[in-house]
Length: 272
Image (cartoon, rainbow, N blue to C red; front, side):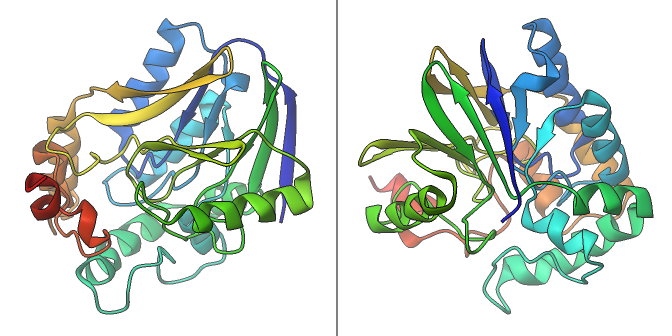
């Protein structure tokens, strides 16, 4: 595993996942960071800069220009290797798997060799210390970058990932992750597990707002991001990306829930 140690980070740290080729959301987040005086060295992306939305090249360029640290997500790994699928971990033949063929092909066709070389050089894990707390940033899982860990996943699944991190990189007090698209916080033994959510797609909660995380004085919190989702939708329509994710940007609901565990699907959450 290719790790990167950022050392001590003083002041608030912004953690965000999944820009997902959503240039409008990416610009909104970067603008918010500037307005709050957050320097690039205190901004970390959990990966999947490129995915469902229309502007893969523009989003990569914006993130690179901003200069923030990026952890390799499954999309970066696959694109850097010239693979033909996203490596998202979707069940073969599922709706999410079938839909991914369209958006991944669009993203792949949008990126030049320089962007792929940049992706190939991204770390798999980032370590930093914040107010005396040692933090690790990953995408999904350690052995499996596309592992889905949900708010309701068994504690043993999180403990397994923490053990893998600590076996290689030493003790940690917090793990910050992404991939699943749903923000949440769990306490696993001595470690806080924080999924920062993603900025490029709503959290399947009926709101077009997306999510990111901020660490301040060692304490994590989840924040909402408002942006021009109508412009992002229109960009997807112009690009021919109309398989359903364009509607999700406005409705706040994913086009398919087959990737979600049953207890997190709308029918289950609506019934209590």
